[in-house]
Image (tube, rainbow, N blue to C red; front, top):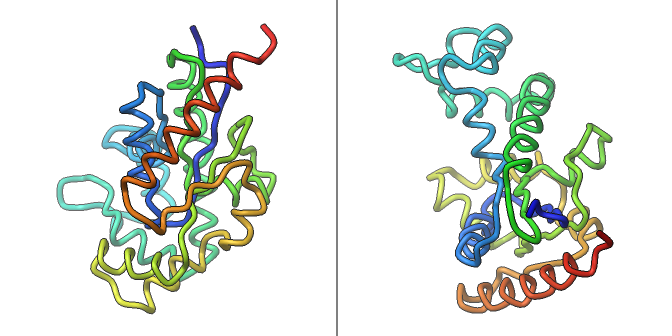
Length: 208
């Protein structure tokens, strides 16, 4: 049975989306990750990689011919126009890959994990269709701390990355459901389990 309910999972960088995704997978829910799709569309030999190199030059490639994400990230976070140019290339390819995978999914509902879901909605940029928006929420101070630890970057770099995304208030304004990730992993998993039961009920109640 193809999923009848589509949940859009989002949250700021280092908010804990990966932990949330893993729990949904454990519960047997199909999870389609935009970041995984983003990597797929710039794999060597894919037209997406060729388009990125044509726009940004061969310096964004490693010696092995793969995308040098660190070099590209440093460039786009230093210039908003560069970031917008990259998004214009990749976002349509990522959406198409997500829809391809969604068409193959089975179960009462699926999760589309999209870090920039709120941003794409606010721009009217052909955002993925979702029935409910689930936001993983965390205090910004904790978010910055986790980001610096995870990526081995300084506070200025972390703040620049966070500032490039939608604000916490914007995400919460868009949310239908919120997962508070300021506590323990056990508490987060229990909250996900409650949402899972709710989503299964909602999916079952949809008209056939």
